[in-house]
Length: 327
Ligand SMILES: [Zn+2]
Image (cartoon, rainbow, N blue to C red; front, side, top):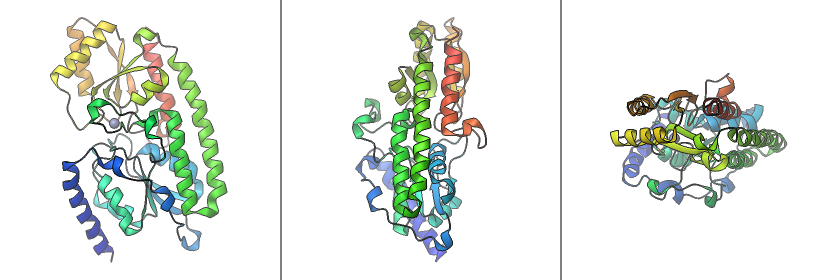
């Protein structure tokens, strides 16, 4: 039986690889909310719910809301790039054995979204944490062909909506835990709101002329939008494409003209691109330094402050302000 199921999902993976190369951009928007159809899970012996989360941000939120009623496994660890992630055989086995999988959607997990959608045929609940967000609140940059920017967790208000989606899904699957899930979500959302105010006030410490976040890829548009910071990424919204020499020169020119003192590297993206920009700026007679490493699509190591969602956001804003506000 196990073998057959592995084969079934493997076939699904193969089919999706073909489908997704043809119409990558539209798939996430076509789907409907999976939430209301969620049914209670039978948990023999009162075992915890078995949940898989894709990104480390979602892992952290499920862990916070689920508490000890949920056993959560994160697919993508520190430094892992979700745009490029491919499912291993071990991942498939783990997904098959799970009660539910929580994922971002919006084309973030481009290489495995097919698996995550089709896993429902095996009775696994598949929940996109972005499904309850009003589409008007999502960014859809023109260069992304009408698809949504997936990096919504940098708008802390939108993250609270995702936390509520996780809470509601857990309650639907495990109604007995409702009280606990509500209390955990409330306490987490309160902390997210406090951090939102902190980020807002810290961002204002940077002189508006250099309040520009330059990074390896365009992960910070929501951050920019909410906290009044201009952003420039060398690569686009996905890391799938490569930056050209012209992209490097253009960004170096912008940095030099604006007198930006520091640029930032991302823990999940190689830093060669940013290094090339620094050199190109130097060739134009402008010295720009690396302001530090910030977390975009992955978080820090588990067990560290930056290995939590709240710690990661705090680390990012503190690092950015430290490097840009001293000029
Ligand atoms: Zn990204």
